[in-house]
Length: 403
Image 1 (cartoon, rainbow, N blue to C red):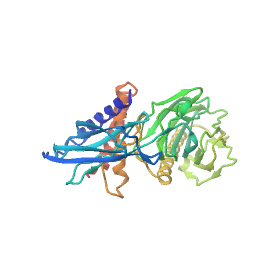
Image 2 (cartoon, rainbow, N blue to C red):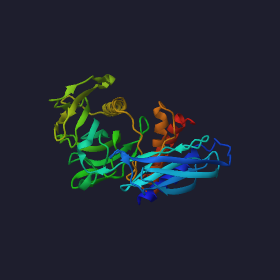
Image 3 (cartoon, one colour):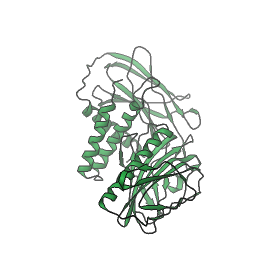
Image 4 (cartoon, rainbow, N blue to C red):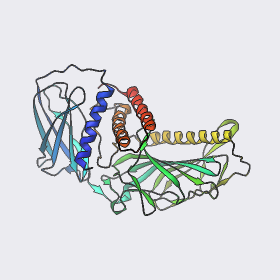
């Protein structure tokens, strides 16, 4: 799907979602409003204006958040644009978007107010294939021993400390290194703190490695990715060479696995009652190309029973929850819209110090759009689709505030 088509599809779908969720909140329409929308398109990589002649599009939405009108103009030599609006309903809201370096960028969403021009400036970025600015803020690994297999969950928080969108160059994207024996790996993107995940269908396998083909945007917590797979319990070894530097690596080990913990610092142990404990280990400030040693073996006294399996499952859930909590604590949440051809997300204009919820709601809306797209393309069964969709809608209703 081309970049403009993808942007328009997401925009239309977002509007339908908003209309569906908030249909019970009618707004009285008013007409006759006149004003102007201005702004600049700033290049965050070069710290200068976007090139003269770059096309920008103004999207208008009515009180039901349905797309009603689009206008197009081009930037002047200073990277500025202006749209003049005559006799428009007062309850319309607006967003500006542009395409640059084959990526789609968009502004905040806001309405006209008073006689002052509405500023809908936005930032675009160059692209780079250099991974030097890519870091793993945190990697949390949890294990669940079930019979002769071990279920592994890895939770990544990636950051891009540079001022350009990382595209992966010849490699094709951000690389995820998994054990060669990993069975049926699944990949999911995080939708924000406490908001669940949706399938990361853009992760593909090439030349024995997994690649996330979605560009990595500048900023902390640019990507939260959960990877799940199974391995034989015999000779379990998750050791690897880190492809990117890592601030923190956290491993949770249940009682029925012995861990060769040389080089690891043991943290607090989490009790799970009569069923044992979960041991937590950590390494920090690891350089790229360093070796992460992760060798395990079954504990001699461990006997796998249904209750023990439940205990390990609970422990696995606990360590993943802890990982998510630490991601929120040690990295600032950056609003990012999932999608291969977009690098910025519109959010309602708010005052300084507005809560994270007001940013998270837009992440949830775009996640809902991606979930619908995945279902329509046959990538999700209906039962899973309906459950995930209801979870997102429930979260939206909990956090939504009218600005």
